[in-house]
Image 1 (tube, rainbow, N blue to C red):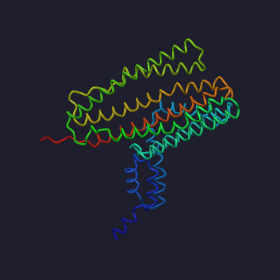
Image 2: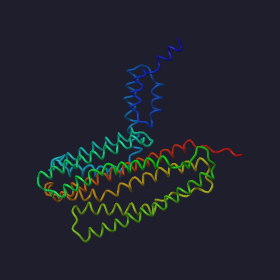
Image 3: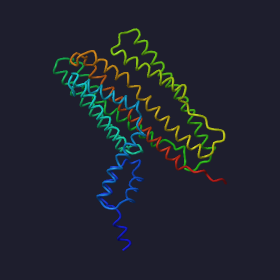
Image 4: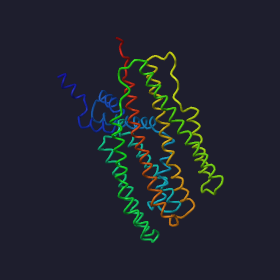
Length: 364
């Protein structure tokens, strides 16, 4: 009788499986366990899940979303939509492009919430690369044949693109993705679940040195790029000058931030083992968010060139080179930045998980 009563208090297996799929992987175990404990009947279980899952999803997005990265991604989507024939070349088309960009950003946030914390498997990573590259090539071929039909592209340029660029795009990018996967699998593990304070301090100091070198290089590149853009804006007539100067300011601000506040903080002299773990975890996450922003800044000048061209000319007057080279290169570069960030996110989450489980190694 008791076994039968306990069985009745468990949700049906298929219903529980469906609810678990709807819960983001990072919170799935805890939330599914709470819902199971509060189960009374299928309608009550469904209603409780419907009230809980949206809040869990929004909470996860708020914790993991990076507003500067979202702004750059939204700008990228808007530029790509406006530069192509997917939306009308009119003010209404630009409003539609903004609306579609917001929808795509929401879809990206949801996909990120449900993809899990670990990096994708090698097979899935290569398949994603093939699908994205094939989509970009298909889009470029569509624009290419449209330009050829309108007699806006010379036969020599058409042949160069068809026989030299298209066949090599997918293999090269897929090869780069495969190299990332191999590098991930061969990377040695430096953090372990049993460590003493001296070992943990040594690992943190190595992490500090890497961050210091990387931030110096990135800050010099950003400040140099900012100075170059500023000189260009001051000496040439640049379309959408306000946006161009905003780009100069962003590069300068991020470069200065890396110099002033980008370094990992020093460890307290008398920090205990738990404090060491906590500092290491928080700094890993902070540096990852900084790096996400910096990586997304590098395709931004290409995005600006696309937007500037669309702002001062009609779509029919834009040089074919913009459609054939700048836009596809920007798309593939942004995809490459996205997969770099995704690989890095998996590594950081893995290290944070090890630190969370780490225990003090017992003495001899």
